[in-house]
Image 1 (cartoon, one colour):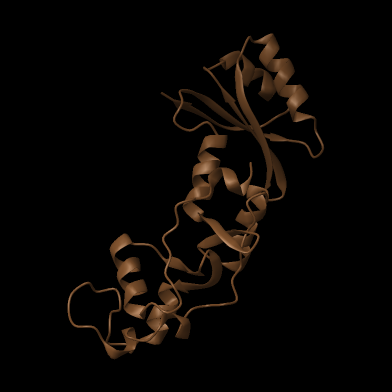
Image 2 (cartoon, helix red, strand yellow):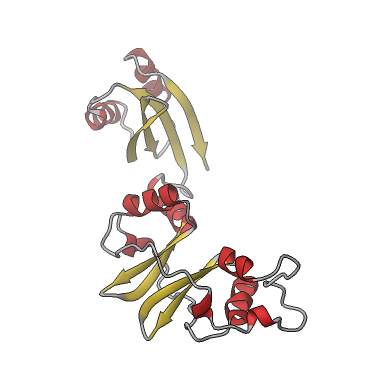
Length: 211
């Protein structure tokens, strides 16, 4: 999966010469955490809720949609925006972008191609991709079990599925707590297949059913 497949393409933006109150109103009304700053089509900055809070005195709520405009909100966005922006490319693998969000402890990545803003990727978009990869929203059974390091999980699952006439939707493997885990999504429950997994030395940690 690539960033371009999951990013939001219609991005709300502000300009560097817009007043800070414009960004504050947008973040408050749309309940978002950041908004890209563009000049033409080029990304020049990012305004976050933290930027706005730092720009205002402690007794001022910049996201309130009621009341008079404070002096602190009348400055241009250029004065408070973040210019050291972490971005992603549309052709980047989605997991690479996910690592950036986690490692940098940020909520979103503007997506840039040829210096132009073409989208934005948030943690919610990553979650949507994960749910789709796990087959969420479709009926079936999810089996989670331990596997050995370097074990050919796909060969194991293929052989068991063929033997028990099971239709496999997807197979995912990952490392958790120092051991390797596999997740298999089937079209329907196959108790004999789960039992054979146990008998072959694989600890089955869960069997979840979805309707």
